[in-house]
Image (tube, rainbow, N blue to C red; front, side, top):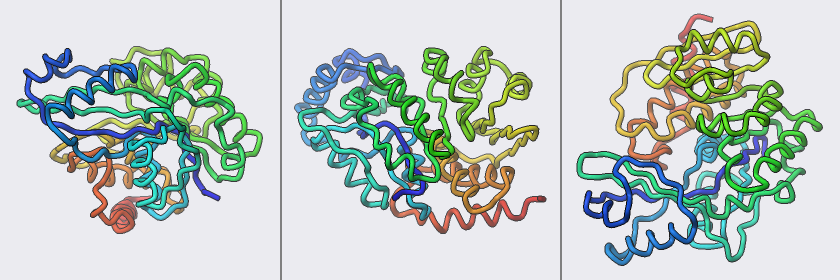
Length: 341
């Protein structure tokens, strides 16, 4: 039985250095973010393999998957549900889960292609992202392990799942309702502004019921009915009118949280950024671990800042396996402990 159960994307990522010529030959715009069909993505992968030979080993990804990875590495029993193919990428994803004692609670699907992405870095350091949802689109209510959900202590739901397939929203709702019926609190992430706006009915129904929602400033702004470009103060005012408890990551400005009638703003130290990918995911994972260990919201925000600040110093959405996460969490909690109560 897992203390925390996460529902999220089963995704692996491959980082490559490419030239502008290669991007043009592939029909990709430098700096773009493109979702492709499985067939088109497989064409691109085969073309890259033909021109380069064996590609680098894939690394597991996915927003809530990144959070779950950190939670498990911090020593909290954690399991993950999601749809992957029984292919090389899917088996790599499961193997990566096993390395950090993150239980994979779903079955890989025979004949399906696991979702994957390419992070293509050009000569100037620009990043072009290409991805396919693959088997993630097969998620449905029937694929949810209700026993795992209802026997957990906390459910972590990835908002990006809503857009994967025709039954993805129903699967998310099924999961949240099962948790609610069993008295299991759940955390809901906001994913992109496009998803928050496109699945307004879902967020209107479940965000007020969540223990907390988590996202960046732009995503939270859209959640409360504002334009993405508004200020934190405008978002604070709208959150205060609602029954939603939220943590809002603010990049270099730290994090804000609203719980009940209390609001907290926790700045962070300025850190040189190597790669900001996964910073918010690490923040959420560290925040949840800190709260489980009895820290106040304010101190848990400080822990999240420390851990996300560590992640952005690596060219990866996750901390390298060489990083001692329990030691990092202990150091972060000691820093948080020095704050005024």
